[in-house]
Length: 107
Image 1 (cartoon, rainbow, N blue to C red):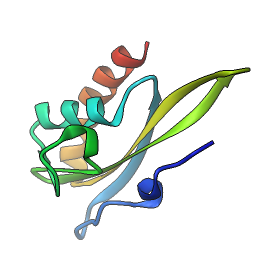
Image 2: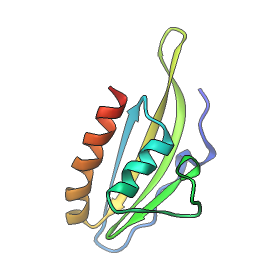
Image 3: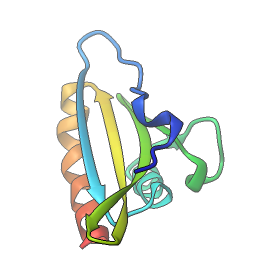
C-alpha cells in the first residue's frame, strides 16, 4: 500500500468549525478536486486538479489525499480521502452534494 505524503494533512480550522473525513474508492484526486471546484471551491497552491491537495470554499476547506488500496486479491483501486473543515452550516450543505458526486463516480 502506498500513500501520498499529504495523506496525514488536515485543513486548518476557524473557531466554531467542525471536521469530517470521507473516503471513496474508484475516483481520482483530480476528480474529487473538480467536484469541489464545481461546488464553489478554489484550488489552493495549484491550477491543476490532478495535483490538488487543498480546495477552499466559502466557510469550508478540504485537504485531499489519495492512496492505492487492495480491493480483492490482485485488484487495486485508488481511494481518495477528503478531510473537510468548515462552518457547520456550510458543511451541512456541502457534504451531501460531494457525497452524491463521489458515490456516482466510484460506482
